Length: 58
Image 1 (tube, rainbow, N blue to C red):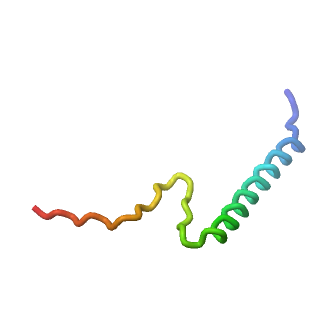
Image 2: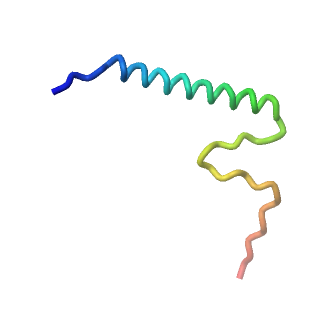
Image 3: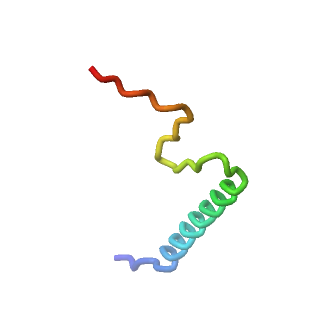
């Protein structure tokens, strides 16, 4: 049985952390450059710009 390669696993985790941190930093920079636009979170629907339609009662 092979022994786990802890250095590889740690390096992979560190790279994932670094990529996530960079992505966050870029989002902040983009938000600062475009303050009037709301931030869009990945995986959530974008907010609609128009007024919401009134609910019809029957």
